[in-house]
Each structure stands twice: as C-alpha cells, then as structure tokens.
Image 1 (tube, helix red, strand yellow):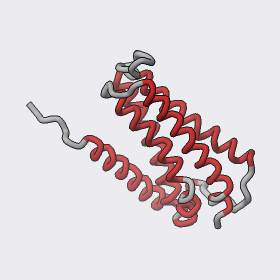
Image 2: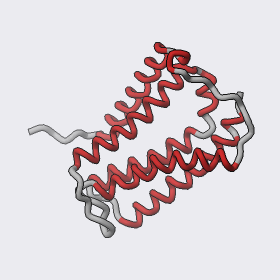
Image 3: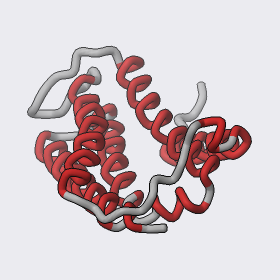
Image 4: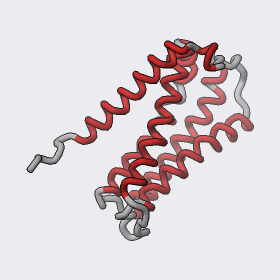
Length: 175
C-alpha cells in the first residue's frame, strides 16, 4: 500500500512551472517571426479595449467556474455533478496548460518587451484563474460549499475586471 502524496499542490505547481519553462524555451527557439508574433504598438486604453479583453477573460472564467459544478461531487448545497472526474480533470488541465503554453511561448519568442507588457496585469489575471482552479480542487475533494463557490466566482470576476482595465490602460501604453 502506498502513502497518499503529502503535498499534491507542490507537485501541481512544479508541473505548471515546468510547462511554462518548456513553452518559454520552445518559444525562444522557434522565434517570434516564425510564430508571426509582434508586440503591438503602445496606445492609450479605451472602454472598448477593456470590454474586449474582459469578454475574452470571462470565457475562460466561465469554463473554469463550470467545472466544479460538473465534476462528480458537485458543490455542496448547490448542485450534484454528473461528468466523470477524468473528464473534468482533463478539461481543467487543458485550460491551464494551454494558457501557460501561450504565455510561455509569447515571452520566449518576444522576450522582455512582452514580459514588460504583461507585468502590470498578469498578477490579477493569473490570480483570477488561480482562485477558480483552487475552487475546482476543493470541489473535487467535496470541500466546496455554495457560499465559498459564489465568493470565489465574485473574487475571480473582480480580479479579471481589474486585469482588463490594467491591460488596456497600463500594459497597452508601455513600450
């Protein structure tokens, strides 16, 4: 009989960092010109930019918010899940993995310009997604209740709104 892993969160973090590092290295090796990537010219933000960025971010937010509801244990006092755990785990891993690959590839291919443009808004955007992934992991263990689920969603949306504003008005005006 094997013992349960003592720190599964640590393994997840190391896996995420590994994906990010590998995609950064691959992006650097392939190069921006071969990927068709450019750092867009700096420009002042606008409400239309904020709305477009927020709409994109909320699509990922909606998917990550649905996964705790759909996994087998669901959310206590809210819903019972009905999809197999392997499917919700795979979906979560794909959403997180593809986003890490995209970030790493852009940073690797474009270098410091891209990193400087991401720095102001990335903590808010990544934080918004991270609280949703943590909620998924808690739901998976049967430890996520309705109040916590709704609070987590509210926090994620607030972080993503802040990220969209920063991305448009601050990140967009850099370099």
